[in-house]
Image (tube, rainbow, N blue to C red; front, side, top):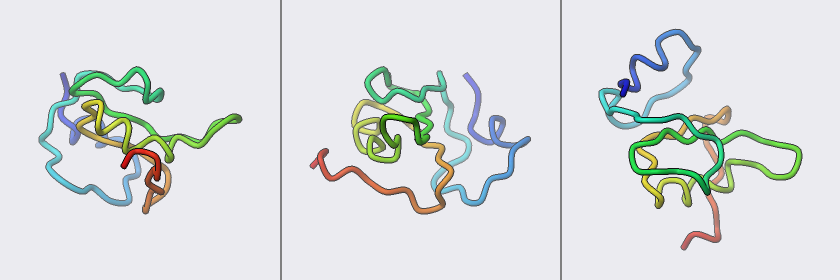
Length: 79
């Protein structure tokens, strides 16, 4: 497990919300495969936009979300 601050120190991060001491167990880009403790990367693909699955990933146990948008769009289907 690594802390978020360790994972992002070599990248250009626009904003961090929450506690960067949080520990992340795995990195994932498929919200259907999220397990508690994972970091979900919301990326745009050829078939769908990962930003639409942020709420589902958090509900599945993601402790962190990485996304290229400073203000990620949130899913309307997770409510």
